[in-house]
Length: 119
Image (cartoon, rainbow, N blue to C red; front, side, top):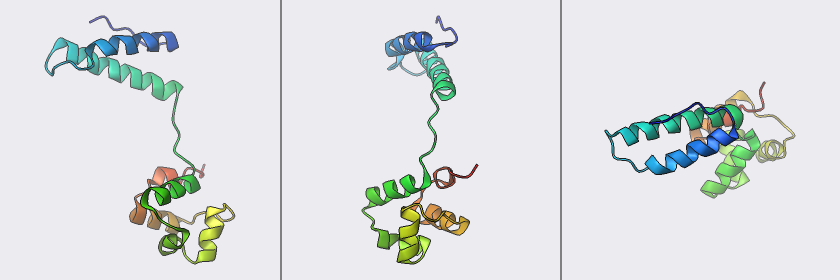
């Protein structure tokens, strides 16, 4: 096993190439150990240099609506009146903590996404 730290994108490319050779390795083998170490190194480098932030709250809500075939009317249970739903979806009113909790509990939208706008 010849593994080095990933310090730049060239090292990352080499690590991916090395990973290709051991990706399907059987458990309890040296190759499998190498695969696990490479995956950990690659994830650490990508998380540091290419972080993926959670989606904006309204985008997360719209995505869940699309996934579940929901309409704005379906959101009234979680947000309130049709006028309030419209204001939220058009970004004219912020989500309240009560709405965030209801959307999380009812539609399983992660808190990280619903609270992404709060600094």
